[in-house]
Length: 299
Image 1 (tube, rainbow, N blue to C red):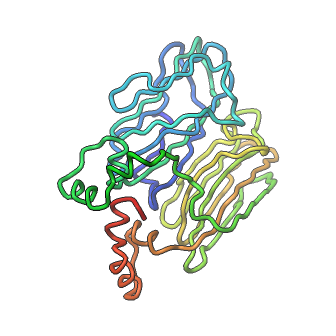
Image 2 (cartoon, rainbow, N blue to C red):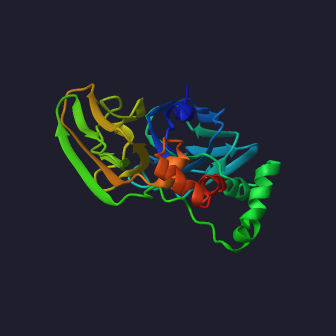
Image 3 (cartoon, rainbow, N blue to C red):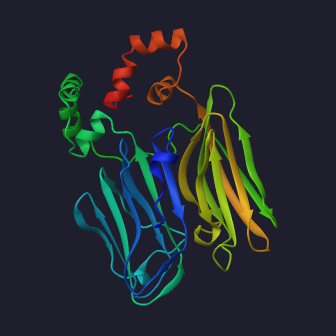
């Protein structure tokens, strides 16, 4: 099994961003280290690649039938685990991540992030996906072809909707809870970043994140996380309860930091995620054409 994230299991309030941080044993030659396939109804964007420097190690990405859409020809020139390589690769059907190692490598440190979307009409047009007759009619109604011809593409901001920020910094010598936060009524809580002092060996301690009714949304080996001077960006949204735990496997002291944000649970949020609306909210949503605008991707 590779290091891919179970997109269909963990995604609940898209767009969301998940990190995989797991050391990988590599054999000499070609290694498939992660593969995303069968993640419909979502679209994913591969981002946030980080590698420990290793001479002669090569990395490639194949996406939706195209080979080598990203290449790191030698990881000795990588930015390192405390930074990320600049990359943005969308995939609608399959994404395969491979490493070619010059020799056997045990516990190679690396990580990657995927941003997961439920495709709107606008996003499907941006990615060149086929539209249904109904979607084509909506595209014409809202002038999406003209909008796309004029607009400059901008990446989705995974910190969107955050109005207040909090940081939790702990030092633990045993397993315990870093954060257990009930979400205030009318709010959303967004886990936004994780970092730690990396232990000297893999499988020493794990950071796990659960939210609402989904356990182990993230399960991260501290050995592959960025140091405390930086953080791995994520977006895990919670509307009920957010929990972050540390599972210690090897005795020692572990320094960990997480950041999260708080924002209002807006009417577009509730429509986008199919949440129950009050009679007044439904009236406003219908008057503003919000159900259709959310589907189109302009609200």
